[in-house]
Amino acid sequence: MNILEELYLGNIDPQKRTHEYDKEYSTLLGYADRHKSVLQAALNEQQNETLQKLIDCYDEMCSIGEINAFINGFKLAAQIMIEITKKE
Image: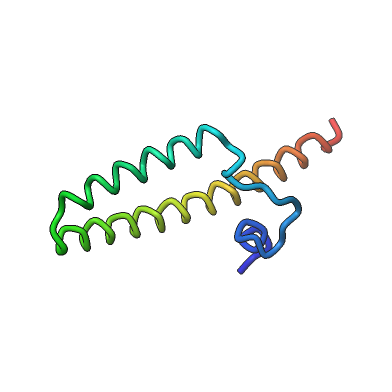
C-alpha cells in the first residue's frame, strides 16, 4: 500500500474530519436510510439479500472511487507544484 492510500484510509491522520459535521451529507444520509427501511419492509427475505448485496457493491465502488479521486488530487497538486517552481 502506498502512502497516499495509507493517508486516505486514516492510517495517517493529519486532521480529524468526518461527514458528521456536514449538514447536507447528514441530511441525505437520513433520507437514504429512511428509503432503505421502507424498501426493506416491502421486500421478502431473498429480495432483501439481493438489495444488501447491491448496497455492498455500491459501497465498495464508492470507496474505490474516493480513493482514486483522493490520489488523483494529490497527483494534480504535485504537478501544480512542479509547474509553479519551474524557472521560465
